[in-house]
Length: 139
Image 1 (cartoon, helix red, strand yellow):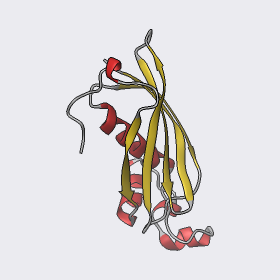
Image 2 (cartoon, rainbow, N blue to C red; image 1 turned 180 degrees about the vertical axis):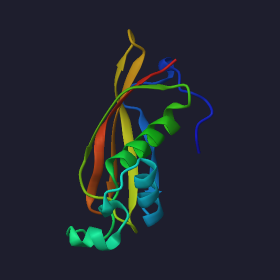
Image 3 (cartoon, rainbow, N blue to C red; image 1 turned 120 degrees about the horizontal axis):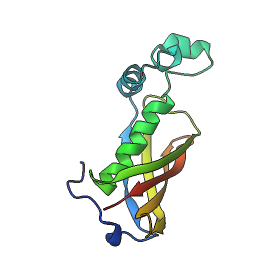
Image 4 (cartoon, rainbow, N blue to C red; image 1 turned 180 degrees about the horizontal axis):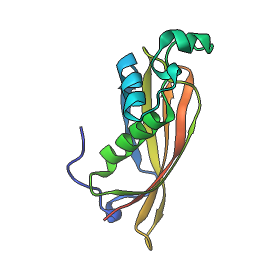
């Protein structure tokens, strides 16, 4: 559910935890994300090709992961929050049949720029799929 109210800068404090978000990883999510981002690498939509690469199944691309990270942070911050920066790093792959659970925390706040930094991770059964930070400008 997307928040209809945007967080105000003065309402947020370092240490504030974002609510967790569980995202089921499906073949449809992986392949649709790859196609939507024009990533036609076979490992993202062809199970046989993925297996030839040594992977047990198709795997999520970084652009889909990036979109899911943005969804997670924006659902907490609200629609009027603006991303100033997003830095992510991939870890364990996302395969169909798993679940990636996002968690995060406000780790910095700058009154001069009205920005907050959120440190986050998306974890699946093999470990962290994605870790990173998002810097947001809040009204």
